[in-house]
Amino acid sequence: MANAVLHVADVHKSFGGLRALSDIDLQVMEGTTHAIIGPNGAGKSTLLNVCIGRIAPDTGAVVFDGQVITGKQPHEINQMGVVRVFQTPEIFPDLSLLHNVMVPAFAKRDGSFRLNALQVTSRQTAIREEAEHWLEDVGLYKQRETLAASLSRGDKRRLELAMGLVQHPRLLLLDEPTAGMSRHDTNSTIDLLRKFKERGMTKVIIEHDMHVVFSLADRVTVLAQGRIIADGKPDEVRGNPVVQEAYLGGAH
Amino acid sequence: MAILRNDLVRLALFALVILTMPIWLAPIGAAYPDLMQKIAIYGIFAIGFNILFGMTGYLSFGHAAFLGVGSYAAVWSFKLLTMSVIPAVLFAVVVAGLFAAVIGFVSLRRSGIYFSILTLAFAQMSYNLAYSVLTPITNGETGLQLALGDPRILDRAFTDAGSGIPPPNLLGEELSGLSGFFFCAALLILCFYLAMRIDRSPFGMMLKAIKSNQTRMAYTGFNTRPYTLAAFIISGMYAGLAGGLLAATDPLAGAERMQWTASGEVVLMTILGGVGTLVGPVVGAGVIKYFENIFSAFHEAKLHEAFSFLPDGLENFFVTITAPFVGEGWHLTLGVVFMLIVIFLPGGLMEGVRKIRNAFTRKPASREETGRLAPAE
Ligand SMILES: Nc1ncnc2c1ncn2[C@@H]1O[C@H](COP(=O)(O)OP(=O)(O)OP(=O)(O)O)[C@@H](O)[C@H]1O
Ligand SMILES: [Mg+2]
Image (cartoon, rainbow over all chains, first blue to last red; front, top):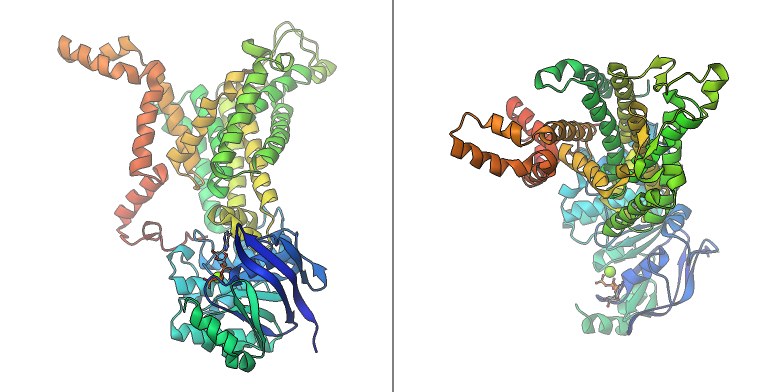
C-alpha cells in the first residue's frame, strides 16, 4: 500500500457552540482520489480550511508529507504543494484570464516573494505558454484576454481549476469543482481530473454530485454533523444504510 | 532595451510633451519655470503615490510625510555637504525610503480604512514632532534654511566659502529658472519610465492581483506583506525625490509640507487624473497645480475687473458669489471640481480622454468601455 500524503490527525473545531468538526481522523493515500461527501453544513469545507491553514483547529494537527503543517502560513502550505480550489470561486476579477493563471504559475516558479520589478511580464514566454496550455485544457483559451469578472460561475470554477493545476500540486483539494456547471462541462471536468489521476496526482474532492464521486473516487469518506460516519471504497459506502439515512435526514 | 515597442512610443510621447511644456503652456500663461517645476515635481509625487494606491489598492493618507522628510534631507545635504543637487536628491530618496520602510512595516499590518488611518496618524505625528521635539533637525516653525555659516564640507574642500550663500547647482551649473525645470522634467521622465516598467513586470502584476483579491494571493503561495511593503517603500522614495526636488529648486524645508492637507492633495491629484493609469497622476498634478496657481492669485479687485462689463449691481452680486471660490478659498473650487469628477468620471480625466477618443474613432464597443476585455499589454 502507498503511503499517506495527507494525514488529518484527531482534529476538532468548534465555532462558538457549533461543533463543525469532531474527532476527524483521515488519511489520503499517494496517487488516489479521495472523495468527501456529506449533507450541507457537514463540515466538509471547514475540513479543507483546516488543511490549507485558513482555520486553526482547536486540537489535533494536519500532517502533509510527514511534516506538521498546522500553524504554518497559508502561503507556506501552498508552496509545499497543497493547492485548493474554492467552493465559491476565488479568482482575480480585475485581471485577464491569462494573468489569473500566470499569477499562480509565478508563485510556483519564483516562490512566495520576488522583487522582479524589471522583468517584462509579456516576455515571460515559458510561464505564459504554460498558462495558455491550462486555459486550453479547461476550455477557456479563446477568452484568455477577457477580464475574469465577466465569467459565468461555471467558467470561474474552470478558471480556478486551471489556476490550481498550473502549480502542479502534490495535493489538490477540490471543493465542489463542478457546482454550477452544465452537464457537458461537468463531464469534461471529470475527464480532465481523470487525466491527472493517471499521472498520479493526489486529490481530495468534495462533491454533492454522486455521478462525479463515483466516476472519480478511489475512496469515499462521509461526513455528517462534523463527524466521519463512514469511510471506504465507493461501493461499500454506497450500500451503507447509515449513509443513506444521513443523506435522507440531511438537507437533501 | 527590455521594453515593448508600444511602451517605447508611449515613453517618447510622454517625454516630448513634458519637455515642450515651456512652448505649449505659454498661450495659457503657465510657461514660467516656477509653475512648470511644481507640475513636474508633483507629477513625480503622484506617480509614486499611484504605485501604491493604483496598483495595490492601499490608500495612504500620510504620503506628505515622505515629501517633508525628503525636503529636510535635501536641505541638510546642502548645509552639511555641498550645494550640488545630486547628493541632495539621492539623500532625500534614501532617507524617505528608510522612513517609509518603518511606517509601512507598521501600517501594512492593517488594510482598508485602518491602514489609511494609521498612515494619517503617522504623518500627523511626524508633523507635530517636526514642530516640537525635532526642532534641532527641522528648525521648527521657521523652517530649515541655509545659512552663511553652514559647513558644506565638500564645497569647502575645493573652494573658499565666498561671501553669500551659493545657489544649488547641477555639476557646477547654477540650477535656477528653466534649467531647474529641465532637471525636474528629466527626473519626471525617468520616474515615469520606472513606473511603467513596474506596471509591466511580474511584480506589478502581483500588486494588481493583491488589489483584486488579497486573500486569494496567500492561498496561491504568495507572501503579500513584502509585496505591499516594497510598493510602499518605492512610493515613499518617489515622494522623497519630489520633496528633495522642492528643496533643490527652493532650498528651504518647512513642516507644513507634511500636513494632512498635503497628503490629501496627492490623493486628489491621482483620483482626478485617473487611478491606476500611468499618465493620469501626472495630468492630475498638472491640472491641480495650474488651477491652484490661477485661482489662488485671484482676489476681489481682480474679480471686480473681470465682471466690470456688468452693471454695478450685478457686478457686485457676481463678485460676492464668486469671491469665496478664489484666493484663499480656491480649495472650495477644487472640492467642487473633484466632486463633479468623481460623480461623472469615476475613472478620472483619463477616462474622459478615453471616452472622447472612442467617440472619434467610433468604436462603440471598445475594450475599456464594455469592461469585458483586459487592457492590452
Ligand atoms: N468561519 C466560520 N465561522 C462560524 N461558523 C462557520 C464558519 N465556517 C463554517 N461554519 C459553520 O460550520 C458548519 C460547517 O460548515 P462547512 O462550510 O464546513 O459545511 P459544508 O459541509 O462545506 O457544507 P456545504 O455542502 O453547504 O458547502 C456550518 O454550520 C457553518 O455554518
Ligand atoms: Mg462547503
